[in-house]
Length: 249
Image (cartoon, rainbow, N blue to C red; front, side, top):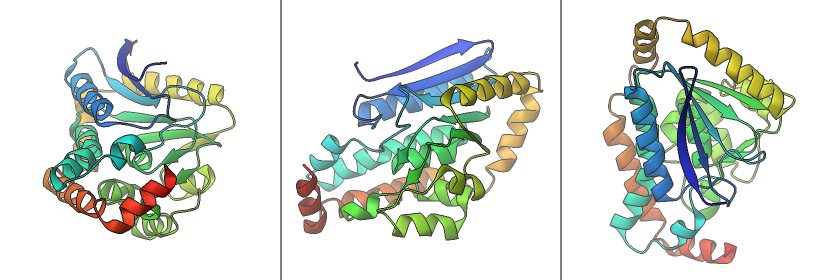
């Protein structure tokens, strides 16, 4: 199947779904489409609540595109590449509507950042998480603020340092990333639909004001995440990271 990002409106719920055959990894063009879809859904008055999901039954998101990562050869390209997730997180942050995360499977790196930037995240027991960036000589600089905001500094630093380990969905729930963990994808989907329907009965203006309250203190993220993207863009050019990436090819 071809990669895609699509937005569909079902009963006032905007379902934003992304897909890539490489375990739902996200190249720059899909990240741009994702950020644009989130912004459009936020501006669409017929949509009251948003659900962020990925296609397929297995991996939620494998993070950044490996093919694009290995092709970076200068600072500016690196900054633009890592700014992709920054733009999506900032679009989610500034969206005036609650975003429900639907995480059906494993999520890595930037995918953990996307899950963390949702306002209410639901998952299956298969949705283990890993921040793998240190493995290739960089770090979770861009997604770090979103992950830290949800998990706290202690838990975020734990999974960022222990970059080889998948942490269970139950661990992620205990740390505050997931609100509930379900046995099957079917049970997850039923719960997401029911919860979204419930939110649609609330006052949209009240939900918008609540979202602003929840995200207070992140007003500098437009600048902060781009600064972080520059750090990652610089590190990816290091001899260590170049050698590491080549060993994975």
